[in-house]
Image (cartoon, each protein chain N blue to C red):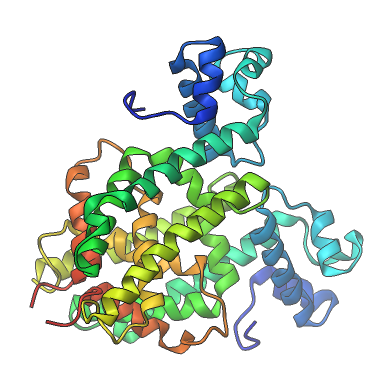
Length: 207
Length: 207
């Protein structure tokens, strides 16, 4: 994990009260790995404390339950994605250029926050926290869809594909990366640009 | 479900022995809907018989356990996908044209067999049946990746994106459709062609 990255409210609060900050952050990383492997519903606090190598009661010093960890993890993924929308190149310029910038940055955030974004994309809405995350995801996707519509209206995106479908395919392409991308893979540095080229220009050679 | 479609070996065998054919096929459809909603691991035979509105013992007349149903469902999805590769336009012609044909047909199979393909794409490899399905999926993806390599070598696909990455993005785009496509949606008939255009030519207007 990137030590420079701000941690979630809960992780900061708990850590500040009892333990050095890196403990809560490490526990979160352990929990997210377990959730991604076993599935959130199938993971117990027992599983989490065993994976962390501490007792269940030590674990409860940090968090009140697994839903807290889920929320902190999903917040981390969502905060990373929503932060992109506040960046200058996402906010000003031609719609198609803002879109291109956002897609590139989405891939970068996905690479940097892989386990957290993976968890976010697997959320199904079984708990209040999951439904909250789904709602936030939908709001992010709606922003992208609106930008595709604006770009299409300005003639900057093809008109012969429905812009709602184009937006869904665009998000689907970016999100599908979590299924196979692993850090340290050769060509990882080129991935954001490869995705931008493929999404915007397609796989055919440039005409 | 399409009544003309051949059913799995087990469904045919059981149905022939005890019940009209449509019963086993309907039970499979019920089971797949439950697996997709609850997750395979979290679904019990109790859940399945309740969803089908029959007793657990009636259910056991048709199948020996839930893994049988999982296998039949995954077979149906995989048979649909592998059948594409045997079709004439998938086997002869320029690599890029074969690829375009396969992508279009993959979207069509996904639309026709949505719950089965959805289940296939969520398989994580926790049981022997799931590992078998993952292996078959990998073999399908490897065929696509090989075709992308051939097309790139022939200059029919862009050379500035790694062809393994291009193949993964292509499969990822097609597969992402299960996350939002619902039958009967307006524009469903155009989806295969929309996906082909977007994947091959990108979202930018044609130059």
